[in-house]
Structure formats: C-alpha cells, structure tokens
Length: 182
Image (cartoon, rainbow, N blue to C red; front, side, top):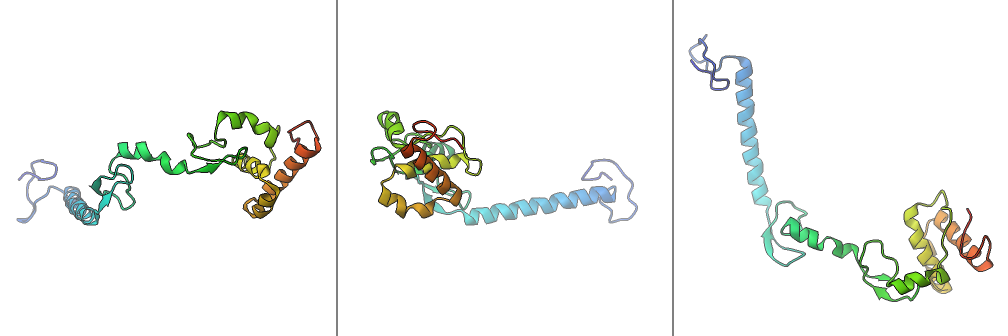
C-alpha cells in the first residue's frame, strides 16, 4: 500500500489502515481542516464585500476589507495627503490656505520671511515640551490678545508656560530679540 501523505510504500497492520504512521495521518487531517477553514474564511470574506464608491476617483468597487476607502493602491497614493492637507490659517497674515506639504505653517514664502517680526524663534527647546508642539505655540503667540485668551485651553500647562516665556522675551527683549534661553 502507498501512503497518500508521504507516498512511501508500507504494509497494512489492519484492513482499514490508510496512512503509514500516525504522523502522516495527523498531517493529512491538519491539511484537510486547514483547507476547509480557508474555504470558509474566503466565503465569509466574499459575503462581507460591499459595493462602495472610491473616495479618490469616484469609481464603484467591491471592498476587500471593511475599512477600505479607495479602489486601488494607486488611487490611495494619489489621494492620501488630501485629508492631511486640510485648510489652515497663516499665523502672519491670517489668511486661510491649503498647505502644499504636511508641515506647512505659512501660506507663502513672503509670510515665512516675515515670521520673525510676528513669531519668536527658540534657541534651546524646553525639556518638557515635545518638538511637535513648537509650531502650535508660535501660531498661538501670533494671535491677537482676545483670541489668545479664548484659546488658552488648547495648550497644555507646559506649552502655556513656554508660550508665556516666549511672549515675555519677545516683548521685553531679554536674551536678544526674538529668542528664548531655557
């Protein structure tokens, strides 16, 4: 007799014996169960597929995953930065603009060049404030006084301390114009 799993020739010990060993039998049963499981999962996935409209190009497609929003990887790559580039307010001229890059703070090169007149720079960072907070603090300082008072709750206490220190140094002229020494 030939084992259907390992294809070796063996002598049957009982009339119902199909495999040469328990190991071959267990391996073959595992493969059968795994194949049935894959078929069941594939059928469940097909049942879950939904017709959706692509968020990028507007084409209709059947989803592969529940959270899928784009019809293809190419469409996703073309449109993935659209949400990140939400409209922002330039801290210098107060104009609403759509940034070209993810980290853009100013609407134009001219506003970027004029930023020193409105927003202080920092020579040494404060240890308890993460680097990602500095653009937000600079934008906060550039706001008019009434708007700053209204938006104080948006900053953490450490960011607020740093913003106050930056404001004082900017307007009192400590440590040189437009700088902070922490």
